[in-house]
Length: 174
Ligand SMILES: *[C@@H]1O[C@H](CO)[C@@H](O)[C@H](O)[C@H]1NC(C)=O
Ligand SMILES: *[C@@H]1O[C@H](CO)[C@@H](O)[C@H](O)[C@H]1NC(C)=O
Ligand SMILES: *[C@@H]1O[C@H](CO)[C@@H](O)[C@H](O)[C@H]1NC(C)=O
Ligand SMILES: *[C@@H]1O[C@H](CO)[C@@H](O)[C@H](O)[C@H]1NC(C)=O
Ligand SMILES: *[C@@H]1O[C@H](CO)[C@@H](O)[C@H](O)[C@H]1NC(C)=O
Ligand SMILES: *[C@@H]1O[C@H](CO)[C@@H](O)[C@H](O)[C@H]1NC(C)=O
Ligand SMILES: *[C@@H]1O[C@H](CO)[C@@H](O)[C@H](O)[C@H]1NC(C)=O
Ligand SMILES: *[C@@H]1O[C@H](CO)[C@@H](O)[C@H](O)[C@H]1NC(C)=O
Image 1 (cartoon, rainbow, N blue to C red):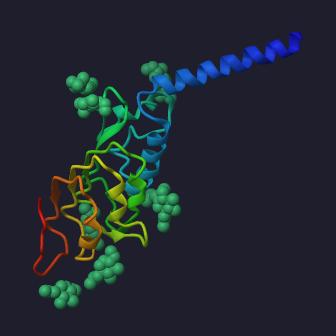
Image 2 (cartoon, helix red, strand yellow):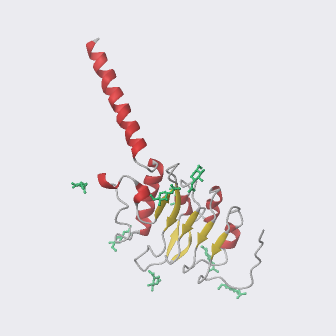
Image 3 (cartoon, rainbow, N blue to C red):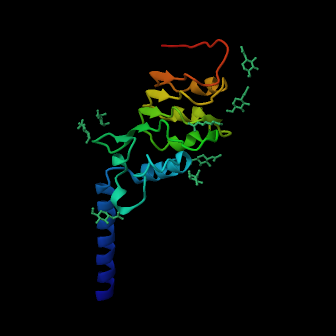
């Protein structure tokens, strides 16, 4: 009897700690781990220093380039401009952004991105129903991205300057 009570108390303490941890972090655990996954690709230890798993960095809303809605704690803005410091061109996995369901602003300019990995193209961003601003300038995207941008229906601002696009382009605006 006494033993089972102790188990119950320790479970309660565990639940309280878990709730407290979830509640006080400011950012959602799933978004925090998605940011840590992204960091691996952007790999700019200077500017992404606070993108860190350490005890003093648990609130990812405070991380550089990240902005959250104060009420919901959800990430609404990700500024990753010029965050790829090493020189190689690379293929991005756009699915890495799908956990940020409230995202409104995404700046990926100046990152030497050549395109997206197979089946993880920019069309994946169409699940982000609040995405209004997308900046892809100063990368190496080619015309093949146009087919994947069509589904981004909430977009209000799209920057594509200085990429490897050519020919004439039909833009269908609202
Ligand atoms: C990150 O950059 C450092 C130094 O610039 C390099 O040694 C390391 O391999 C890079 N990591 C990834 C995942 O690209
Ligand atoms: C976290 O911050 C506290 C207080 O500023 C400091 O004493 C501690 O060393 C820090 N821990 C880490 C891992 O940086
Ligand atoms: C934060 O989210 C709430 C609920 O979705 C919304 O009403 C509010 O306008 C948002 N605030 C900002 C600053 O975006
Ligand atoms: C949200 O928080 C930021 C930074 O703490 C602050 O500058 C901003 O005024 C806040 N916005 C609202 C709507 O409370
Ligand atoms: C982009 O890649 C090219 C070579 O592929 C390199 O010369 C250039 O410095 C890179 N730019 C950045 C910002 O890393
Ligand atoms: C792309 O990222 C998603 C989400 O993290 C992952 O499930 C998927 O395996 C990745 N795809 C590739 C080709 O790396
Ligand atoms: C355009 O980019 C895609 C991948 O992003 C690549 O598969 C394709 O070969 C490129 N096309 C040209 C004409 O360079
Ligand atoms: C655009 O670039 C591709 C690949 O470099 C080339 O095959 C095509 O002829 C170019 N189109 C125009 C209109 O310049």
